Image: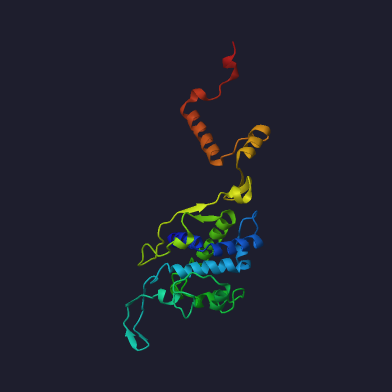
Length: 280
């Protein structure tokens, strides 16, 4: 599942570069719900319907696995006017649904248009209801599997996409090296999976958004980042004493301690001796 999630994320960033107006609306929602000083969390998703709609529209538009993963019939099956023998492999064309203009009416075919209204309609108006999981199965098809072969990680993948994209857009402004109108979103490779074309992406430095002092998290540990000549001069020169402590690398300390004991075991000369031995 990591490859499908990372590919969806790469394709999603490309689409956001192509559609800066969508990016701006997401960042407006982020500022309203989360702000700039708190990290996004899973609970934010229910309060950010536009971001949730964008994640679903990305999955629909990119059509990551056009034929999903092959199924097989467990017994002879009569389907409509056909008899399908037991053991027959089945391919399901997700593209035929994800880009069906009757189900997803857009100004142009294969267009990227996240819409809360369309999103809610496709979820049978149950975006915030307890029946949400059932409704998602009606929205089939934006995932890799459906029915009994549904991907066990679909909920995790969708939540990861929400958290990744929300965090990136909270901290950075995206900028393309070419005009957004010239960005081509046609898959570079298509077949079992649709792979986005290579592209260049600029992340506007955090300091231009958050100022010369901001916080990033390494896992659960916060770390303050200082940016620019004035901030560094003030901390490393003017407040030299206050900022002269050494960062604690827990893993390094453990390794150094273990190496010291190994050295002592190999070389007993280094072991502590009776102080009397060194007296004249």
